[in-house]
Image (cartoon, rainbow, N blue to C red; front, side, top):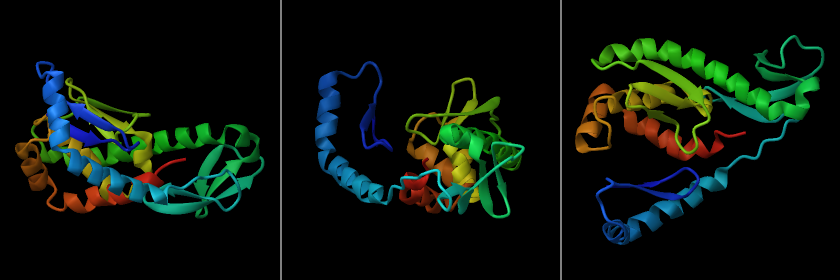
Length: 209
């Protein structure tokens, strides 16, 4: 049985179907102090949440760096990164959020493809494919058929943090849980993974539109 604090502040319990409701409630009560401590930390981190507007000068994250937005006219594509700025065609201001999401999806696919080629060589069990889309409260997940799934927001993370997200999910192909074996294997594959995990905990709230 595992208890998680999701990125939206909700508490989630993962338990086998054979576990009774009473046992789940008792487990939550036993961990009540830790849950409230983590929720307090979540609230503290969420004070840094950024509300972005699609106006000149607004900053947007891409691969760990902030780039200012410039509204332009008569551009060949709705959105591009050029000259150290995001450039958004004025015609697409009405659906700017959708345009940004499509940009991040495309770039995430490109970068994950590139990084996977470097990372997968460390593993005997390989992914069959991967997909980038809107995951509710996760940066990434895995499927029993060895497919990996990534949130489009992963394109906002620094490359080394993206490597951590990929490596984390690759380890899940062997250990489909967060057991001690999982963490030991992750430590072998990426000894400094805690550093990148902490970056996500601290900065994940800023990875939003």
